[in-house]
Image (cartoon, rainbow, N blue to C red; front, top):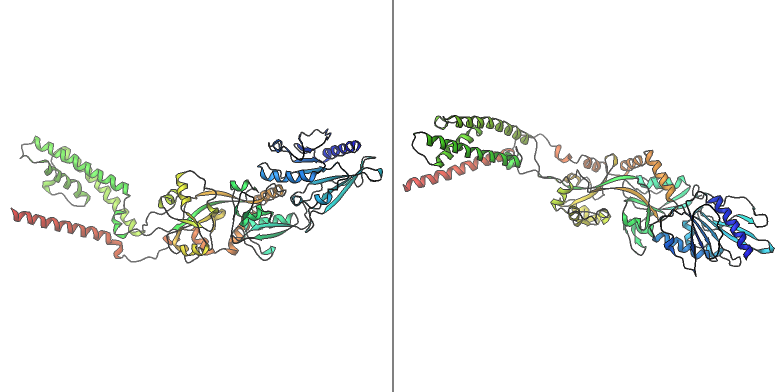
Length: 595
């Protein structure tokens, strides 16, 4: 037994020098002595009665080389694969060297039946054999590639202790990922334009993410197989490592990769791996289009409310100042004394008549210098005021005015409008936000079935979340159609923006090659091309056009003759003036009779 351990040490060190030289460090699990003499830093973890202190492992050392030297290495292997799913540290490039030092223990059948082998590519199992007084070591791995029997054992080589040589001189860690010989690539997805449009055959698939997934599989000679769950859409992940929908298929190992507008959600990073981003998307809303403002208010639209306030303040201040000036000059003269209200009434006439394009009579024109100067200022002021008002009124009469539209995030929050989509995945990125404006927005979101959303699209009282994609494309649900899109307009601001990623099983060995593939197709512009193709092939172009030019329903108006509605505000002012005049006239008559 001692001699066998000596030979094992020689073989292990030989393999580590040959195949682990590029590793940052090693994790060595042993329940006996292993004489490691390599130059690669190693973290040694002692196995005591089947117990392992995993606190020594997860310190972000960057160790991707794993050596297990034990009488029952399959137990440690399974526990290690379980633990790396529960922790945050990633081991996507892990490489296993597994040795059993007891030749009488037949671990091979049990080991190659492990489910965990399905998720590992670089693995070497060293099995000692002391038959015929000749000690040899069988070096085996699992097939991994191919359409079936992926855990089938494969003999790579044999090592003889007598001359310390290999039988075949084969590569003990062959590259199993570059050509996977048709191994199924199970893709969790559902039809969601323009990300994923599932066809009957590979050639009929469309969408920026679905085609990316298919091409990734074909590049590495895998067989892309969509795993579709239309009912639960994105779904959710539960704390017991189960779930539903797309995310449930991933966390339960029913799929290798998953996509359909998956964002960089923090909760998912605890259970899954996230690829490099494919597409930047902004989440915004189609909100009810603003209605035409009341026509009788047309005379007030020439100026903004703030400007009307400033004009009123100027008038009041001018009347007050001019009345005081007139009072002061009158008291200095030898004229008959008058009370202050008389000068206020005179000041009102002097200030307002020029603005209303009325001439002052001879008795109303002041004679003193200060009052004349004040009158001159008011004449200049009235000139500019009447000119700008006329210009503004002409503009208002030409272009229709609308009520305040919802364009910004603040506008939306202040409106109190309800909004929604098919699932609350739309608010996952902001549901824990503490800003009051986002708390208000999240509270107004309602996950709603498609049929109900289609009904709500006709009410004009509900907003719908959509995605703003590159190249002015939009991901709009099918519940918004040509009949209803004209009742909405697009917000100018986004609620938030996100990066769309592909998700994989946690610590998936596919992630490094997938990341490299995504970067290359992004650099080549292929993702954008596939997105545009999906928009053209499967989405409603009329809806896309109206959303893109959301003022469509505002700017396209027929030229019409002047109608009563255009001038009803002016006649309203005239009617008000006549009514007030009549009331004042009646009151004066009543006072005259009493006298």
